[in-house]
Image 1 (cartoon, rainbow, N blue to C red):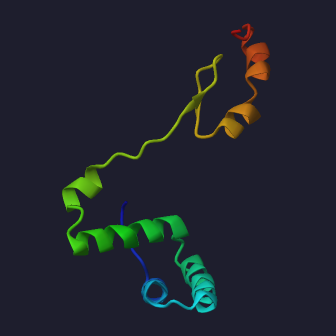
Image 2: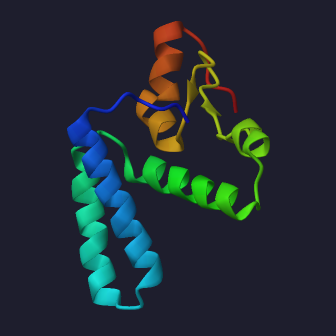
Length: 117
């Protein structure tokens, strides 16, 4: 994950999100945790950082702090993505829905080929 340069305001929102997440992890109050999670999402909306990236970075920092993962291992671990490929034009898609939207049948007509059985 690469670091993006953040303005002072964005840094404050990110710091607030980190503080709220640490509070969630130490607080058994389920209602307050839901409220805090909404506040985290609101803070992140000001930074342009997705919740998934934020939580992944937080988990990585926690693992490094606890010594359960080394920096080299965590950065070198490749992300496995399943590719869905059109049998006609061989274009790759991230999801089966995207491939379906592409329409292999329409692609076959466009390229003058037959769909494989």
